[in-house]
Length: 282
Image (tube, rainbow, N blue to C red; front, side, top):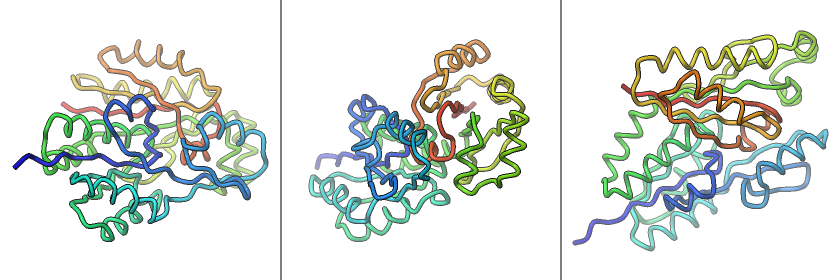
């Protein structure tokens, strides 16, 4: 009997480039992005660049919504009908109901479906998805892939330096007084994504100092490690090429990639934000 093939499914918050999706045959279920009465499918009917333009042009605070159960059922059913073993890797359950929605959908479809909580999002989720897809392509079985994902979860960190406090304020994450003082003093918060939740890692005055501080912190984590992979994540208007050069100079043994931050994180980050997602193993 031939070994059944494995299909990898994720959601659009993984911020995967189209060429990676095509190269590794990844199936992406989009979240919805809502501007007032307009509903868009993330990266399907609304590109990240257009999201940031709309964000800057409107006073409306956009929201994001998890995919419907029906959307998951459609994807899972199509793959199971082709006799695939399905592994779904999704945004942290603490950040979105997407993971729970996928679990519910999996119970409604006849087939071998495993739903995995990445405990993260953006490029940190994307790294897990690409690794799983590479392993599936190489013929590894489901259990080996899930064991590898468990290891990766414990060796990943994600940080983002915000250019403005405006979107945190509009989203209710900080008060008006904090926004005023922070803006006056040019305070740039560095957000940290770990164990499924987002917290403030540090507050540094000026963007340049915050970005340099972040590289220094990551360089310490990577020091003496051989297997270092870094994603520079960015939103529209950020000097991504300049930051890639800085990161590559400070951490020359790292493999450095880039990807644009999608709406779920971008909703609070806003334009001109930069961050680092780091995967380090001995």
